[in-house]
Image (tube, rainbow, N blue to C red; front, top):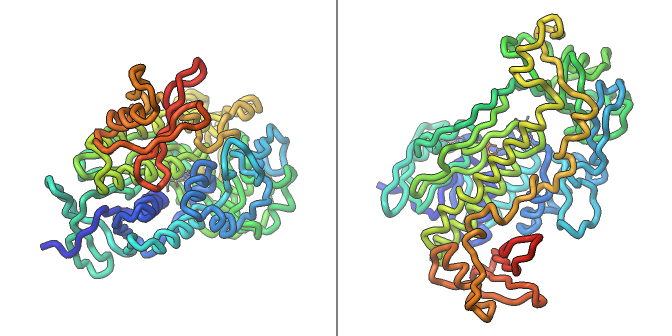
Length: 488
Ligand SMILES: Cc1cc2nc3c(=O)[nH]c(=O)nc-3n(C[C@H](O)[C@H](O)[C@H](O)COP(=O)(O)OP(=O)(O)OC[C@H]3O[C@@H](n4cnc5c(N)ncnc54)[C@H](O)[C@@H]3O)c2cc1C
């Protein structure tokens, strides 16, 4: 027996599940998010909220809320420093990294922001529950899924009592992270042959660190040394920091590593006062699911792509998934999205993920060697740090200065419209003499929908077509030129 019915059931209230709920909620689609944890914000993972993500937040009306909520104020210099140690020689410095400086730029409407993931999640959560059609249930895990032609029947279990209930939905999205239950339910497999990279993250308090380092304020310091290659950066302005040792040798048990000694060694500040708040060993993967959907079940975020965190991609890519899938689900539920629209989700997002994963792998180079390079080095060149062996870096100032992510807009990599099957399918018709039928034809080809979008002409340069969402979904047609294709 079904206990309740909803348009979309989302598993997971991480940044991706919350963003999906917001995208659906803004379009008036009923959405229930079930989250097995009792609150958001358990993991102090992402810090880079990129330009593109912040543009989504702006559209949702919460870009200012995030700016104000951040424990790192907007005037903090968005610099990235490469140095051997916090008191050692400087290798390279990037100013205005990820376009985080608060300034007007005609290319985008919001600057990138350095903000802990737990702060972003809380801002997203607060906004999601303010939307009338969205509900979040913490302490509830998705524990069973079946689908039929008419919808999805899910089992939702109360984590504390163990009681289960049945939720019927038209669609179900697994935004349930790296060990996705929904991914298993649809039989998707993660693929990739890049080596898993062992890392060790430590959140710590060191009120003196800001005054004792010699490189000036920065959001991120890449400590490029043979002993303990690491990343370090502020979590607030009151002495809370993260330290990420980027290359734990495979045979080292993280429990045997003394985090205080490790930070002192990595920073070069041998007598720094340190209070460890949390220490997490974790493994960076480069994996992508072989399929993102089956029938009415979809995957988004870490559930279908895992990136090394160098470059700040994973969460931002996942939020991009949520936006893409969100408007398409809403279009189909409301009846103006045709049968080809939902399959375009994987077709559009997968090339982006593939390209970004490659980019993230390139970004691992300044901080650590590849496993094969590491294996080929003689043991004598490996330094012994407290309780563990640490792989030496291959970094040079040149490697650091060639790192492209620091100047990313946060669209991360320029995403060309020609990647999208939706854009590629549109061929401007030579028979159409007015813009309106051309747009309608394009929309029909793209979505399979019989309902045509509204259209208008912009300064004689092309045609902009609005599907009837009222939510700003825009198809833009520009005449082909040698510099850009026909559809953007
Ligand atoms: C050290 C580190 C630094 C990073 N830095 C960045 C960065 O700067 N920028 C960036 O973009 N990305 C970064 N990332 C990646 C980013 O943290 C992830 O990509 C992001 O958290 C993925 O979001 P998600 O919502 O897909 O998954 P998650 O954040 O993992 O959320 C999934 C949620 O689903 C819940 N869940 C799981 N199973 C169930 C179930 N059966 N029922 C109900 N709920 C369930 C989980 O409890 C969890 O809350 C970093 C990652 C690490 C490890």
